[in-house]
Image (tube, rainbow, N blue to C red; front, top):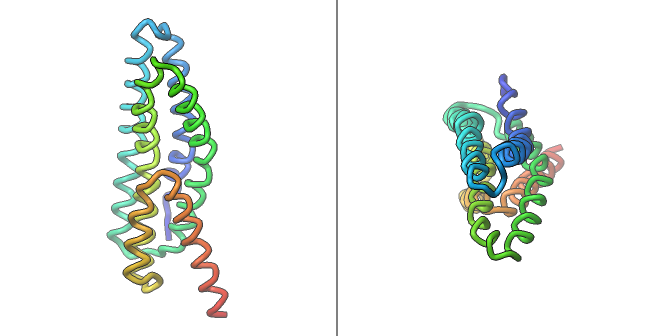
Amino acid sequence: MIRSKWLFYCLMASPYLFVAASVVVYLAAGGLSGDGLAGVCLVVVLLLAGVCVPCTAHALRLSAGEGDGRELLRWVRRVKFSMIPFYLLLFLSTILLAVTLVGLVLVPVLLAVGYVVMFPSSMYALAAVKLMRRQGLLDTHSYRTHAIMQFVLAADVISTADLHEFLKNSQNNLQ
């Protein structure tokens, strides 16, 4: 049983707080004058230190212990699905910036931001998959496939939904 759920809530809110803080810092620092981009980099570092590192450590601790992979997977699904609007916004921003020559330089930065935000939720998903494998709910092939998919943009959501459906179907078959 997962006792502390506040890290999951922080993880769900982090992409939207990141966008809001980046816009505020960028505008307050003067936009394209040069200081705005440095401020946004500071926001990325604060996101890493404040949310990503503690969530990753929590996921590693959960995977090392004896827990219920199904409960952890339910939380992973909530987190992954709550981030879909953020990734749609990121995708649209990347397309809009890729059209301009100046924005073309920022496309790798936006992709890096996407992976930074995705990494902690993928670590929770990896912990859930590991616990489910330990409980005998997944075979080795499924375990490896879902573990790899958790670190690919968009495939992580598909993998989480597939695992959830697999568990729901396996519970229906037992009854």
